[in-house]
Amino acid sequence: MSTRDLYVQDPGDPVWKVPASGAARFSWDYDDGRERLLALYQKGKDKQWDANLRIDWDLEVDPQDPLGTPDESMSLYGTKYWDKMTEKDRGELRQHYTSWQFSQFLHGEQGAMVCAARIVESVPDLDAKFYSATQTMDEARHAEIYSRFLQEKIGMLYPVNDNLQALLSDTLKDSRWDMPYLGMQVLIEGLALAAFGMIRDTTTKPLPKQILAYVMQDEARHVAFGRMALRDYYKQLTDAELREREEFVIEGCYLMRDRLRGLEVLENFGIPHDEAAEFTERSEFLHLFRKLLFSRIVPCVKDIGLWGERLQRAYVDMGVFEMGDSNLDLLMAQDEELAEKLDAERFAAEEEARTAEVAAAIAEGVEG
Image: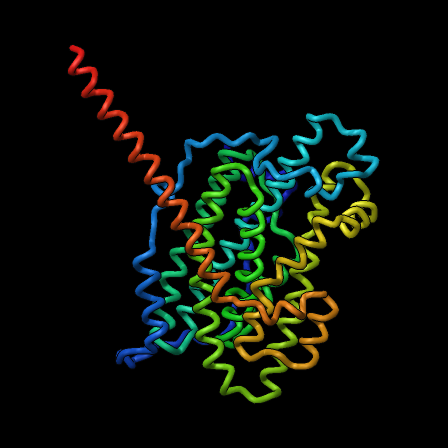
């Protein structure tokens, strides 16, 4: 079956072309680069992994309850439409919500892959090119994983959300070499990390927990890369140039906030647009979700030196200003530790099974 046959709605032209501008930059300076970036590059090489081997794809997933999250997490919960639904209807709604969420993750990861490749092309420093090359491979792996999960376990996909597509387009069209960093590494990756983390910490199902934990281990490095590169570069910019970047961040944050309502799902179930929007705005779970989504972006933006008055007012308006004081390094360290803990638990379980198998074989031999 073609992937196109699994789309709930027509995704349009199978190839999306974004006119790109800007120079491809070569560096003939092969001297040692910045120590921190080279260390991150080494870590990027050391941490490469194979999704076919590290993820247990034999784990079953119930498409009607893929994540095991509570009913309250769905914006229809408590409405007249929810009350009229059968259990089968509610299972289909869960399937569609998960498909919509993970489809946006998939499309975002492809965007990240393209942006990372653009950074390799356009960034002037060789150490940054080295690291971006490892990130391009990481993002390809993530797109592979989400695509497989959606096709094999969920059985449906949703097209890319308009607001996500708009931000990807703005990021790729800009000729300034730092904009793929800012649009992708800070905004899209930062928001994705928070979304991944919330689902990772609330799902009761082992396969999506594995997928999200391992992807987040990689993404923690990517956000660190963006912070390092942009913090150094933005120290050199004029106030006017910094304000231009802040305007981009403000517009991008509003786009990302507004993209996360999943109205496409409700409309697909026959609910009028205005009602669907009202239900999502009233959802306490969605309000919490939206706020947590900026837990990685706001401290990162402040850290790289974009913290002008207008940007601060925008974050006050969004109700996320206080997140500027969050400890981003601690959050990233926890992301990496959780993946390592999952590995340790899995290896321990496999070792225990092997030990039991050997003991059973020995006992059988003695009895024989």
